[in-house]
Amino acid sequence: MLFEKIEEAPDKPGVYIFKNKNKYIYIGKAKNLRNRLKGHQQALKYDYKEQKIFEESTELEWIITSSDYEAFVLENELIKQYKPKYNVMLKSGSGYPMLVITNDEYPTVKISRKYGEIDGDYFGPFIPAKTARAMKQLIHKIFKLRTCDPLPKRNLVCFDYHLGLCSAPCANKISKKDYNLDVKSAKAFLSGDAGKVIYQLYDRIEEYMQKMLFEKAAVVRDQISALENLIKKQKIIGIPEKEADIFYISKPEIYLIIVRTNRIIGIDKLKTSGIDDEESIVSLVMSYYKQGNFIPEKVIINRELEDLKNLQKWLSEVAKKEIKVQIDIIPEIISFIKQNIKHSSIDLKALESELEKVFSFKLPERIEGFDISTLQGEFNVGSCVVWEKGKMNKKEYRRFKIKTVKGIDDYSSMREMLFRRFKKYLEMENPPQLVLIDGGKGHLKQGLIVKDALGLKNLRIFSIAKKEEIIYTDDGKEVKLYDYPILLKLFTTIRDEAHRFAISYNRKLREKEGLKSVLDQIEGIGKKRKEILYRTYKTIDNIANANESELVRLGIPKKVAQNIKKYLNK
Image (cartoon, rainbow, N blue to C red; front, side):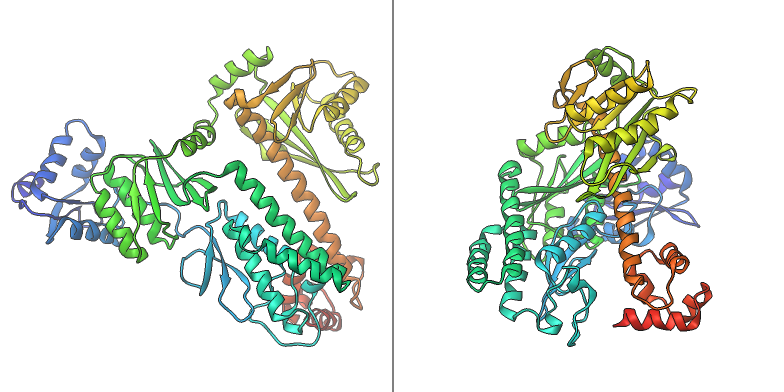
């Protein structure tokens, strides 16, 4: 029946639809419907996907259009509406987060996943999403843009002012002129165009110093430092492409590389239902921008596309500006892609071969990674993460609160943690044969001291130096990991995970102590109630947003719940 229908197809542009009574199977477009459908029929001999489309379809329809471009647009609209089984689809349902500096009298910074939904200047997108949240916090910390929304008018400043996250324009703690310079500086920081404001900041710091306003001068100094660090970073990683999104297809995967102000600011592997032909690539690119993601001046795709001009026209209409679509990727980005994508997943056989060649021993089944985290000598903690049989095993992670070390002493803290952990190896049936310590030769030495003290025999100890990415071994080798990409991926993955896990524990302890210090000011809150409130709410904001009856249900007496609400609402 479908073959007979194909014979009736017109020699005109349009969209064709394979479907059955229950669902849509596949939607495509063509300059010539008859020729395209006959192509589908021919592909039945060798293409599994084509076989499934014909097997599951009982009906074939088409819509004739006045032009190839009209068919191009209609196809994408129908795919979005009906979500056919065998058309490529983006699995993520929303765009990447962007930061927005709002167009208010006293602007603030917000997060948006849809370009244009908030009135203001957009920056990003940020990958991964947590980067946007961290960057928002950084903007508040460095440039003190207001945290409240909408802006109230009051006489007393809020808690964020005392935390150094807001300059309190609501309470007239900053002039409009100075606040606008902070906004301008934040925009320069996010756009990478620091040169626009840095001289104005130098003028401002000079003015504050003359007036002996040293605390304000210190804030401006931090702003200048952040912008100068940005300029230094640009010199290192600057590329000749100003603004672009790059879709890099490496079947069956597709990667997105985001370039803004001559910098690569993000890379992500797009979650799709499969990339197998040109139509799939074009459909995926269109789906990505339909989610509300910002369309840059240039879109680059590393594949020849018959629909290149149609895609360019569609993007220009959606963005309401001229968009260029090209297939050439500049050498600097190709180099970046090779370093960051080629070995994104580790081939265990290749890893075994490379590790044995470089270090002369077989790849262990289990490797443990260690790091220390502290904040100015307070909240000293350590982390142990586990790589096992090709992946991180989070169930085996361990964290340590350093008990015997006061102040900043990385070596002593590392020795304490390693002693406590290595003692467990004596009891384990299959202890790790290799551990990796985040640090240089000094940190490696601490591991060797503990190993000798406990009499451990079959244990190798390495340390890894940041930036240079050099492995220091217990037999005196120094290995530059950039020469061995697979080993680089393995050891930096373990090191970065140990670092992340240590910092998250440090932050958790600090948040707990910070919350408890606030609760100490409230009448009726003792040790047990502090613990209950911390375990339930984690942050001051969450407690402030809880209603009185909710607090009472937790076992907090009604009068104490009223005290909590009264204190925090101030």
